Figure (tube, one colour):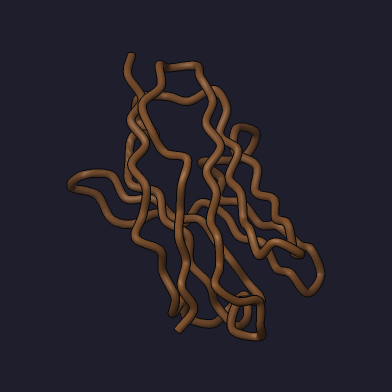
Length: 119
């Protein structure tokens, strides 16, 4: 299983920005797709977006379009989530995950990093 480690979470005021990072222990066919998810207290886990290394394609959930940007550094095995114009409802634990294809199950997960947005 691929090891994923997130960093960059913290507390920020509404309207602020944060950049989350996710480092993967390997780059292989098992990590061709990497994605960001979040889970707020009492809510289901929410897909935010994904990056496919094979073609560079990024897909975003409607809730994040225009405010969140996913990027990656292939050479460093790093995935990033730039979050702008943060809102209190963005408060959640943010996790990265990896899958073999865009339609496969995400079978590697990081431990998550807490993001708290205050009004």
